[in-house]
Image (cartoon, rainbow, N blue to C red):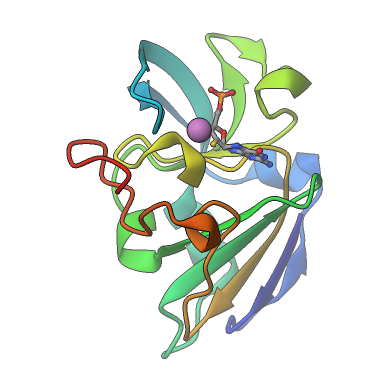
Length: 151
Ligand SMILES: Nc1nc2c(c(=O)[nH]1)N[C@H]1C(S)=C(S)[C@@H](COP(=O)(O)O)O[C@H]1N2
Ligand SMILES: [Mo]
């Protein structure tokens, strides 16, 4: 995983490097924009805040722009990514995260609609400016609040 942009310590993190960060287990529900939800998923991984402590965002960094191996992208403000339960997840319900569900590593953002939880994570760029992701550029709300809906 490539970590770049407005950070003190840009890094290329291997899977082992990710496992070496502080780890947490977090149970959360999953909300899709299509209105279904999956309850009580047991995710394990590094909190996004652990990544921030490792690479140290510079003053002025306000967003993280995420890119995936399939070309998908999304973004979130750092203040949203600092909330509890936001993980760089590699394990689901005690098993290595399978590729169809985003393995080896995906972002999990329980308080946002599913399209913010990018699978097959390839890179994170810290930025002063936001950049619309794949669905956001096609009309989905950039807020992605599950209690409000997609339009
Ligand atoms: N890399 C990547 N991540 C992605 C997507 C995608 O197409 N590519 N789709 C998003 C959308 S629209 C949803 S609803 C969730 C679905 O995740 P799930 O298969 O675990 O339910 O993944 C999100 N993350
Ligand atoms: Mo979705």
